[in-house]
Length: 203
Ligand SMILES: [Mg+2]
Image (tube, rainbow, N blue to C red; front, side, top):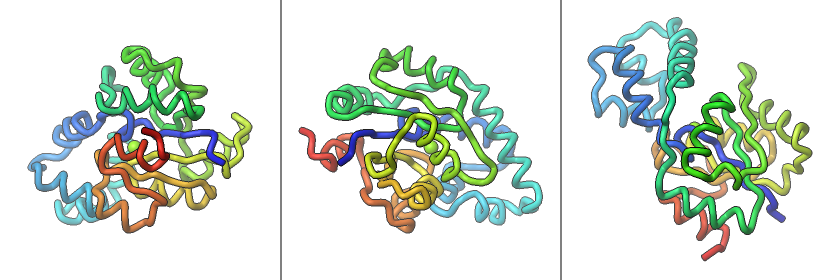
């Protein structure tokens, strides 16, 4: 039985997309709206190829983008997610797992007065993959994978959850397109925050 709902932060709860666009546009010239849509459905590697950027520059670019993004304050929560979080918290325990800093995340939750709805914020990243982050989160917070459902916006989140044997809801308003998310077979796909409730049978 599901006891916990664990959310990814950026792109799932927080509307990081505009911040990403700003960082990417300032780092890569000649990037446009069409390129972003391409990025959401095809991924960073194909975008790099399309823009003729040498592949060896990719790891450094990603690190650079991530640190600039993490330095960004005042990222808002998706407004439609706020009532959903309130409702879900009366049925389930809620947590967050993210590579963003705990300080950024807590600041954002506090600003929207939803911090008390969450049991934990687990901030961690691993160059060896998010499934290892999930496993260390299970250990730290004494979680049983069978009792968790994960909500995230990226294909690599879904892949990591499969490795860590937890169920998934992929959300389509974040960093990856619905098409790309469906390719990795999440348990559920939500095209709007309300659909998360429908999937969990909460009205
Ligand atoms: Mg995300």
